[in-house]
Length: 422
Ligand SMILES: NC(=O)C1=CN([C@@H]2O[C@H](COP(=O)(O)OP(=O)(O)OC[C@H]3O[C@@H](n4cnc5c(N)ncnc54)[C@H](OP(=O)(O)O)[C@@H]3O)[C@@H](O)[C@H]2O)C=CC1
Ligand SMILES: O=CCCC(=O)O
Image (cartoon, rainbow, N blue to C red; front, top):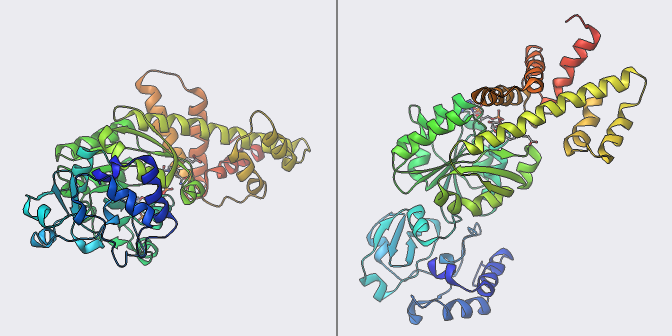
């Protein structure tokens, strides 16, 4: 893998292109093979580039090690070890169909067991070949994990309600019965949980992920929580010797399905770098914001703005109707002007029909407003608009709209329009 990271861009492109185009089922193109062989000085030429007869269809995107087959018996001598390290050469056991770059000379050298993450942190390469855990398969977690699977990653899933794992298992995911078991069997574990309470429970509770974390592993929490919760979880994870990254996402169900999320990350930089390629599978951009808490804070500020925008839009739709305008034309006008936002044009038409198919549950938007108010409070900043908006979402919740899309907040306003005294 180190060898691959040292390859000139053109060679990487040749190898990668082979794999992306599906040329991996039998062998790499002669161009890629020849180019790889000629620039891998660590590997004796007689030991290099023996094509594997059949790569698994589900080929992980990481290309380097999978471009070679195994000649060493050393890995099997160490049984089911996950990763072996010999100088700058890394090898896996063959349970995942992953080849080993080594031969007689290499086998004679001392192989040392390490985790993928440890190796990658030392050698500056990406996490595509890591064993990935995914905890929490709700509206967001399911498509995110699915995209990792579709990209060929090795994914192990867990969800409190087990049935939500089934579609992913049928796509090739492995299943473990607790967050702890997932963490034990994976190099990097992602968590996408509902709120601070569930995020803490899954990370730090009985059978929680922390119990399976050790030095060399990584935990990436992509749930939307407050900074204090993220720091608490991060502290527990790091006490095990593992690395921690908070990485809440901007973008909803459709961007999650399309791999178009925006990651707002903070925490261990080495873990950020290691999982960068995984974030790129699930998202379109990523920001590294420094210390743990900054990603959470950024996410809460964004969602505070979004919650108010939706409430204001709802008010406008109702007013337009009340004064005899066509709210569909209002949506069109808004979408062409300076205040246009995708959520107005995507959610506006269904809101006019009083339909709220859930992409972002209203209860989560209210949770984010509540947490954003706490953030503002922590620095004594007045946020009167967010405070009023939060009240509106609370009213909507009291009308039983928690699990509807957050655009259902318009129903709380309708109640006020019909009965202004309320
Ligand atoms: N939907 C969206 O558009 C976006 C959501 N987010 C944020 O992402 C996170 C997840 O959102 P989303 O997928 O929509 O939410 P869902 O409500 O669809 O999923 C929540 C997940 O949390 C699990 N969970 C809840 N409580 C517990 C608990 N006590 N113990 C263990 N697991 C629990 C649920 O398990 P179970 O299936 O068993 O209920 C489920 O897997 C939230 O923090 C949300 O704010 C961020 C960006 C966009
Ligand atoms: O947290 C949810 C964000 C939803 C979105 O960005 O569209």
